[in-house]
Length: 376
Ligand SMILES: [Zn+2]
Image (cartoon, rainbow, N blue to C red; front, side, top):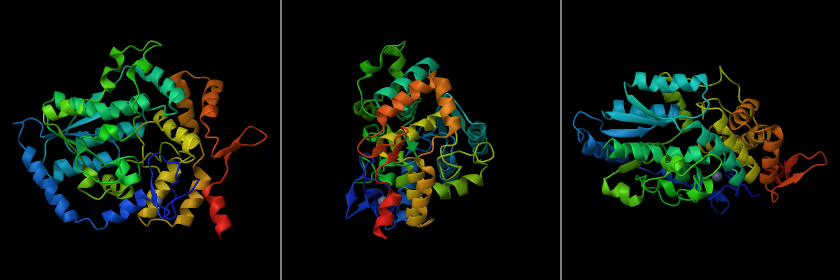
């Protein structure tokens, strides 16, 4: 495993490219320092001018929200700073934190917005969460598909043209669509976060093709035909998780630290809405040898909040930890036994980067903290 020499991201992250030892998330971060944000803001104002009032007294735009800190900033920006009348769209999950419930209510109340939530049928979610863990090593595949498909579908159903997503994850953090930055989110479905698979493969075990309909993304032609205009807000305003947390707090956003001290992460304000969903991050550890701590520490290094050496320590201490509450919640929902779970995990440990000790525990062969030790 080779790591970015500026942050702590490894080259095992899918789609992450390197130039002279520096990852494209770091390079894009540097590029963003040269952006004329005043100009981009004016572009956003113009874009909103086009759609404000275009739907009579109804909604001017839709915003895909989870209820987190970024959602607070998205709604604040569109409703308060740009005077739009947005409809908020979210996808329900199988387990919520108390904090997550309070936060989503808070967004609606603080910014005086309507919210439409899609709650998927639980059995489909349950069966596909387990199946996706086995087949793809990505338990959240079905839910992620819904997160991508539902806001587009609902926006079209409501006759709204403008749809606002938060960040372009590939451009901001590295991934398949990271070479050029676009304001339009029309291609988001192809960013590889949701692995393209044949829907027939998911049918069975009580799941029919009809059960899968809502996770199918509208086609490019369907979106074009109705004039759907989806955007990434991260194109128009600088995207910074920690800064968003500080802003969102001023509008009533709560971190999860008073409810739950999570293992495996280095903060308590990211992904705080749901519990078992975070199992996905543990599967990243098995497949790519990095998880939440690496992702966040890398962002903090880029933002100048910590040094690379401090980040490496955080990664060493936290990144391989599977939180007990996440684990219990995931097993309870999927009705999986401990044996079943660990058999699946065993299958996904990446043999190229992990080795097993005599007690059957897996360890990274060449972790970042060992690599820096030898260099010093
Ligand atoms: Zn980097």
